[in-house]
Length: 320
Length: 274
Image (cartoon, rainbow over all chains, first blue to last red; front, side, top):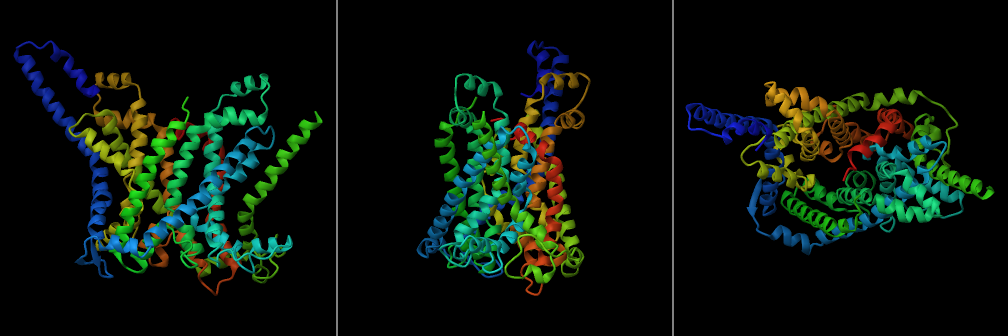
């Protein structure tokens, strides 16, 4: 019952068998129909768009994953579960999962720890807070396109600043993007930098929400800065950290831009993360069927991860 | 006392070093963007520029239509933002303030669709857009993103917080749903609508994969794709590439400079009330 109905159903509670009440109940019914119709009008744009670009494509993905297609995307023949079988037998799925998991491990913990440390260090600054805030949130406004091109030049084997810096410091140059051993690490380094801005801003605004008197009373009790950080900041920040964790993991699983610009999945598939491999199957090799099968597997993996996160991690999160 | 000063100085020192490292990639692109071509491709590379050649910024317009890239990006992001605000606020109002058949079912459908990664629908959506002959058009770039489950959810939560008495008072004055929505709910929800506006604009502004799939011609590219195209043109020199990058990141950099305080405050108010 909405507030609108309540207005009208009050008199209906003390209904008498008079014609006035009968008329009222008819108008109540008419009002209900009108509210129903208006609600659907309000919902129509969203429902229509979701129908065409979300629900229908989901079904279509399932359908496509059971077929083989010609390069134009027309369905050629029913192949049943062969697309899924070939995903597993060619190692495409397991390799993609392995690279993506490694990429997540390299980027998410490092990205969160660095942002947490920086936010904690800048939180208590008395003077000159703004320039540091600006510096650490800066990467957020760079889109993946510009950021990746900048880093591509930093990683350049001979002209790049990174190798020049190493040389100045007396180290051997590193084949940042050209060696299968280094490529994923390099892409992760760039990704940690790129995500720093968002993580830093979210974590420092979370810190602003912790009341100052908590720190003051802890100080009176003789707690040092490290103890305060461990006992007050981290527990009270845990909802924020949980939010950052979920967002970071999902975005790590959906990374595409930096891979496409920096390495294109190479060398030797060492950076062929999941979404890149979907892209390559569907839009480079024009195998929409296996591409769809892979996309559905991604869906399952992300669904599973999200469920695990909410089931297990959120229990440890402290809400005020 | 001396120990405390030393401690504080260490913190400032650490922060400065880290800030330099964070800023360097961006400063580096600014430096390269004003170098003469010889310096930009010289070895060893210059840490700071020794030559100054602002003509790069003019020359880059000669190789790629960078003004069109930036214009397309703002147009596409603006359309998606406006569309998402309209569809999401309408749907959110229906969920928050109206009673209708199948409400909980449709609402759970919306919430469930937030779990679907966009990449899962990418292939069929591409085929749909292609069959509509929308490749390389603004419709193709924007229409699939005009509705948002996340935004609907966000606004619904906000609408639910509006006091019930307000609605009752408006009803007494004979105010229907449409007028109540337009004249009371929308103006009162400015903070939430603002958050959604910024969020949806930035999301589209940073989109990479979809514009890459949908656009073919140079005139339709967005900045994100256009910038990475610059790099593949073998003949161009690096100083011009970075002049392009600098032009592309300048608008958002200015926004950050002026909006940093609001951003930190807004995040604290909006995203984190668990």
